[in-house]
Amino acid sequence: MTQYNLEELKLLNQVIFALFIVADLALGLFYYNNEFPWFALIGSSIGLAIIVLCWTGKKYIYFISFLLIYTILFSLVYNWHAVFH
Image (cartoon, rainbow, N blue to C red):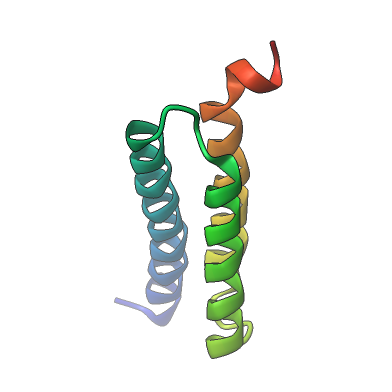
């Protein structure tokens, strides 16, 4: 496997890992609460992004950016009835 392929797989893993973290947390919050706590989802994702940024610098910037993008996306999906009602 070439170095180029390894780098692309690392970037893809960062994006998919961010999706799995946010999707699992959002689904758990949705099932265990009567009203979806979007503030908890956004706060935990921003906190995780700050921690990863402080520990690794800009090495995992794709993970951090997609973590925040997926957080906004899942916040809108689970609060669709409250936002656009």
